[in-house]
Image (cartoon, rainbow, N blue to C red; front, top):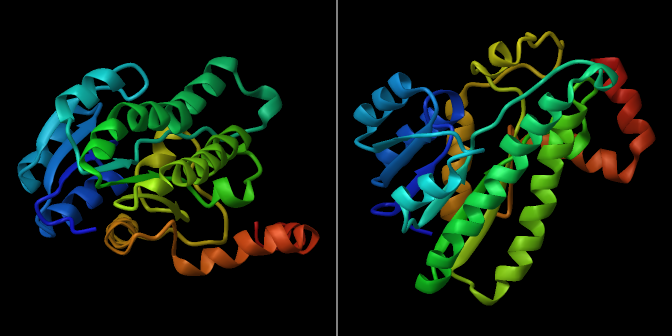
Length: 245
């Protein structure tokens, strides 16, 4: 799909992957609508990229965000939240919050904006998942489950939309990204492997997925190997994960 001139809604656009994606899309000639909760940072990114800032929370303001953005050619569901720790000690409110941000909100935005794409017979939806949604990560059980749910939702949605070849659905699987994500969840990233990558690298993956119509994109690409190994040889995968954790 061509993205020059396309109208693009990016959630979680005030920092990290969302802000990097806004810059990449702007450089490619897209017209941007940027959604986020941090008013000051969001307006700064909008000023830098020539986009329009729409301040709101995807878990409570999805209808308003979609209404202000529509119609869109591309939806990038990037907003996310994390929580780290033993599941047995996780408060229910945190469970609800993670599922709402990482799974329910992207589904709701897609539900609201897809009719316009179907009417135009063109469009693209990108769901930013995580490698945790492909392999599961200890200490991040609910986050992993929500991101995995997003993957299966995207797969089913892609099949539903197969009668509209002009509409694409992509899932992007970033690895560990050097963003404020870990500061916000309150627990720093302390694993020896894999090493964090810059958000610009994920943004390039998102742009490539849209342009080339890719159903899945792992960033970095080698993450496809552990994801496939988990499915083909789960015992070997878990032994490797324990050695590298």
